[in-house]
Image (tube, rainbow, N blue to C red):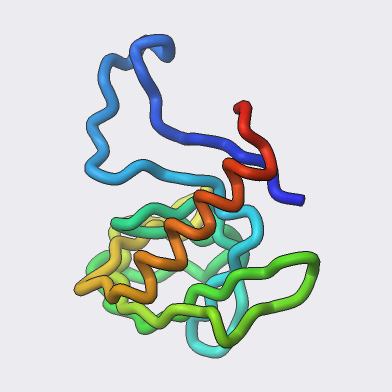
Length: 124
């Protein structure tokens, strides 16, 4: 099952307070479909997603995508959420994108994913 990793850094990391607008969660158990191909989500928040092993895209490119939960190796296509995302960077750690005009279904999927991670692994 997915391990829960909360990516927000506090004072204990030595970098000061968290500057991100949205808390990031590990993408364990989420797949992102871009141009018909599936890629694992490295992390996700209400503001964006980082996709591992995706082809590099130019910054500023707007891509339609679909976030699909995977539970016990079964893809829950009916519970997936469509979104548009703009590429803000790419590198060895994957393709970083921010959501444009996020829909309610996407917010519901991200919060359910975070809740599922906390229930399975309450301690980081």
